[in-house]
Amino acid sequence: MHGNVMEWCRDWYSVKLPGGRDPEVLTGSERVLRSGNRGIKGDHCRSASRSWAEPSVQRSFIGFRVALSQSASN
Image (cartoon, rainbow, N blue to C red; front, side, top):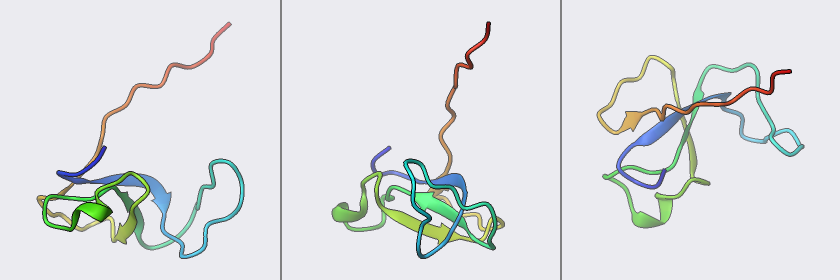
């Protein structure tokens, strides 16, 4: 999660996040990017680092992380 590429997030960017444990912004024009990349200073290469870009932006230092979520079933 730290360095190499910035990761696209599903949240839309907002300067001020709503409160709550896992705040989610549902509308906007830019998507959130997390972490850092190989071309920026080390203090920005952390998971809490937050940036934004329009969803159509394509750069070699922007990617995504594939994750599996196990759902609770009865």
